[in-house]
Length: 495
Image 1 (cartoon, rainbow, N blue to C red):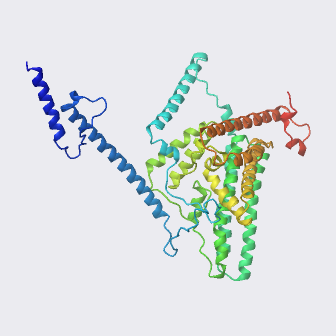
Image 2: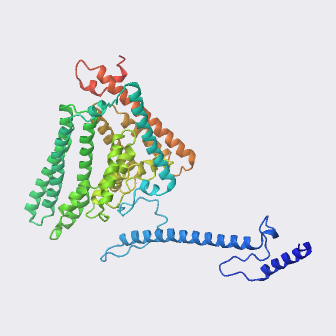
Image 3: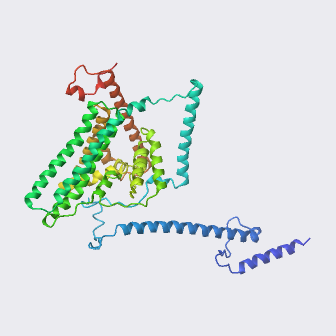
């Protein structure tokens, strides 16, 4: 055996060589510094191997960070190129007092459509969120298996109870037949009225064309306003079939208004020249089906993909069964994304991260971006323009009033009775909360408070509307009067 003194001298010699030898390129040079807890026994082949391992980890992390940064910069460049102004329009310059005016309302702000994914699609690219999604699928499978097992054990056979579903969608063919003239009216009347106004002709002929166009639009409005209400009341359509009619009625009215509101001002300004070219019929037809309520002659579109089309349709069918529990996922995500896939509509920002909201003002803006864009463009901004750009509070109250009236009308149409729970929740509770819980309220406590208010609001709606529904079934009026129709029956019915 080698003497212990010789072993120590050799070990010190190796340490001295490592300290005097310059570090290799790409390897860290430790110098005389020692890591905490390190001692002489770790200097040697183990330290060299560990250094090479850490260098590989460093290289891998830098490559991943560089790839993600490159992807973000490419996306920013694409958005900047799409937003580049035309050649006949100068590049907008940033005014020096722009920071002071950032909080002032902009009357010329317009919705800009760009290619982007839905928020849940982006979150599903993260493994943790995808695992949560898989957990819900597993829970659904366990629920189906347990239901089948209980039916076979208790009844000896499979019990398929679709009575509620069949009742809710009763007389659906009649609702679809009623939808056809509603859609044809929206397809033909606004476009033909615009062509009458945009056609270059003499002043007298143009005035007659304007009058004829207004008559056509009045008839179109009457068809959309009266026909679905008459069919629903006359034939006593059940709730789900009424939903089909009332949602299409409101959607077609909002689409018609957006089309005329975006095109008519340019048509009227061009009357001094040789007229203005009306938008193509194909662009208007595309607008009637694409998942947006803001009209543009062109939208960013994605390349056609048969695989993506089939997947979007399959994703849109399953959540429809759970519409009452998953209305957000089924409609705002799956349904609108299915139409976006079929029409290759590029801007998929139908909603934002409303679940992270710490204020009701942010929640109202992010829950349904499609409807919010319409309200912001045609109620808030037009209201600001009519009020001289000053009374922002009055314009916001106008938005709340329009939204509350339309929501209450939808509930009244679907349920078949007037019970202004939604109207009061929007105006009496939602309006003040919008001003009290504003965007300056941040922090997890405000998010918890917002979710608490949402749960309470949903409980109030379900409870009161269900009570009124059954009260009107068990306590019918002996004589139909106006006050009997608008007075809540659940207040006096105790059977």
